[in-house]
Image (cartoon, rainbow, N blue to C red; front, top):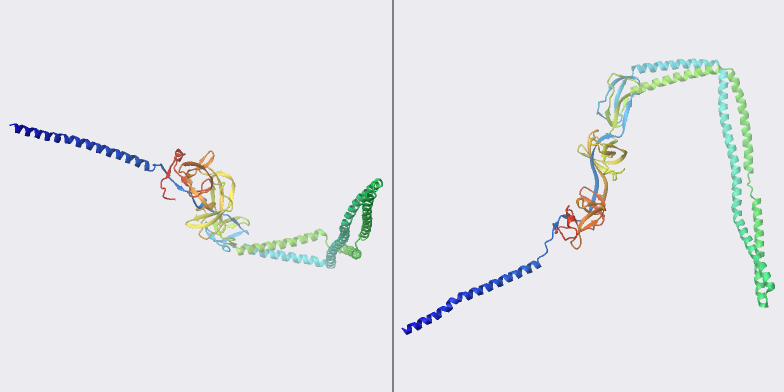
Length: 529
């Protein structure tokens, strides 16, 4: 029994540690879990510290080198620069008309033919009238045969003598001018020779005055000086000045002689001209004497002629008949030739039909040149400061491309259909061809300005404020900053940057970039540059 109790007591002791074991294990697990949590927190903090800062991204692009061109893209209408109104050269009926509205014509092409029947009759009648008048005039001249011959001879001789007298007077004037020129040349030559001598004499006179004053002063001081040595030195100096003074007097004397000799030779030798002048005046007197003689003969011949009014009337009738015949002949030739196209163009504004009568000088139709063609465009205020004469343009008309040049810019604005003031401009088509159509619409691109190998940015990246143009830029430290810029040429896509931004800098195009000023940001696609 006792043994049984001991055994039960031993079993109880063995059971107690087994009940306490789970508690110890549980506590150990909590310690391990806490340690793991601490490690994880530390790792998380370290990761957070080592992880890069998350910066906002902005859209934009890097400034780059490239070409940018500003153009004026618009449309206009084709028209002719030269329009010719064709007038009828004669009064006649049109026998045939080869013109239609919008018809192209070439230089030399016959467009109008005239009925010449009436003009042929008029030319023949004028010829007969002129011949009859000529016969009557000849009969009148024959009746005054001798007087008329004398008068004709006298008139011819008088005309010749008048011309000879005029020529002789001009000849005499030329000789007299020659004499004056020779005298002037001689005087000028003497003046040129005497000028340096006279200038030298002035210099000599000034030096003489200086030496005389110095000698006078030296003489006065020498009389009062003490000491033999001092007196000897002064005498030598005085002697030297006197020697120079004598030399100057001699030079001036020689110069005066030269001036006198030059003055004596100032006269020019015009004896040959004087002799020629005398001969010319003698010849003039002979011409004038002959003229008086022929004028007397003319007066005598006129006394035997018909009256002046009758002669004038006959001559006038003769000229009138010749003029009438000439006009009739010219009209006939014009009518036979018809009307030819004087330039390449298109026929417009026709005012005639076949068989209709036309008067000389009446308008028949117009020809609009196809060699001188332009496109009229309108320019708004936004491009007025850029467009200029001489600028080149690309022109597309009916699917064909042409080259153009700005040749005119109006100086007064007009309002277009929407009421906006616009200025008209003309573009000359430099290479017209037969495919052009007047009045059609043309697409135009005027080359206003171009910059090559320039720093350029997208136009949307350039903003305008009170202080001028500026861009938002990510600076060297990655901070968004406002950069004032000077812009140049702009196209629809790019703007030239003259100063303020360098090639390779990132320029922001986001509209809200101003809210990030002073903060860090990064390009949305930083891998592209």
